[in-house]
Image (tube, rainbow, N blue to C red; front, side, top):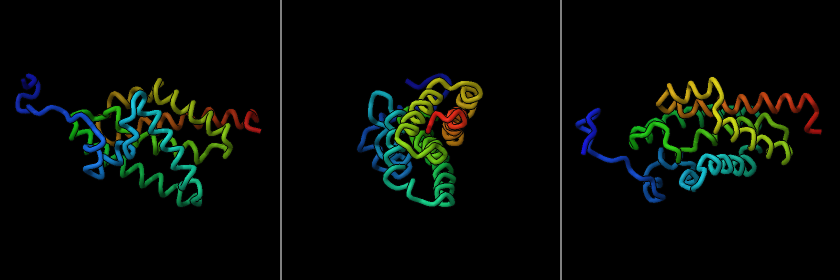
Length: 174
């Protein structure tokens, strides 16, 4: 039965499956090549995918190319997450993890290149992404579009980078 808020909307939101995700490029990207379908904690799986892609390819690029990849990936994520969110009737479906991928690439780019530092960065980023301290929570609640999906994770990355910078300054990563 249609809701009273949207009497003309009788379709139900699709339940994402691997077959559904791999039917369109925006879904593939938004769902992190399927990593967003893994339960529990799809955001954690998306962040792990980001780390794997970073180690396998992105980290080998020069800084200007990494910056270009980050900007292009952010813009593309705004478009794909907006499109898929509208298609699903949920602007920020938990399975859409491209926002974690891009934000964690930013964290990894500016984190010391050691396994221990990157592991700590992973834990810190996941903490801020889950807890959403102000103003992350504000943006997460107010911006229900592709930009909003991507932006709150960039803010979680900024918090993570601030904490990592303090730890570097305190020479924790020697």
